[in-house]
Length: 142
Length: 163
Image (cartoon, rainbow over all chains, first blue to last red):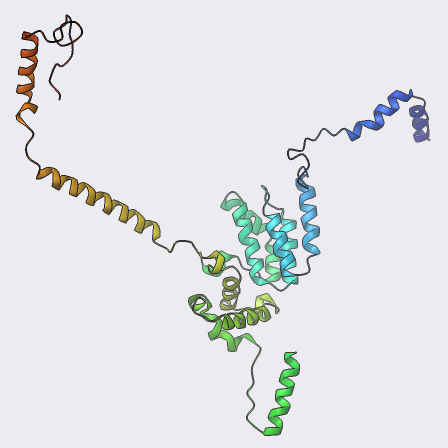
């Protein structure tokens, strides 16, 4: 009932006002540094993680997995644990143990310090134990 | 494919009654093959490498918790080890070698320079301080360059003294 009232009130506004309201969203305040040449340039951290989580859960072969990892780890951010977990599961799915180790190695490269890496490992402990993945440090006693 | 081939081999061995060699597909028999993959990977032939690669792919299909440390290391090395495009451009100890070589070359250059200098004749007598001071005195006595130079008023330079 209130909705209807509001709709009526809105429709009773002058025409030029309504036109301005409709046009407003098309003028974006977001500035594309590349002029829009790069996809996902302005996406948020959450949507980035969502995108790669979806990608890794749909991976079918080693090539796709490694291609996705190359892209995912190319950003100036560290993918969330949910993305890493999806990637580890993808590695299990395509039966590539080496890539699973490499994923954790990639996380180590991306984080800023050892504390953050350890935090990632702690957070990922369930999946690491479930799949039986070892880190490179454990493999080579580093 | 390989299954049918083994079946065929089995049939053939039945008919000829030759001793049957059993090849285990489990990892234990491949222990010696995978144990030192990292050491002699470079010296193996491409055929052998492919063999190891396929064996590892097969091993990685089982539960990862059941893998031995050698199999894990071998799988990691074959996929991401320091060979092929991941091989270091310079061998280990390369920068130390460069540093030592550069210092040795600089030292040798300084040594040769000192040696040549030490066997050089003494500087001429006109380069001694006494001679140069005497030259300045003489220039002032003879009023050389009286407007802007050595004999001018308020001259503060060293005259002919070079050092």
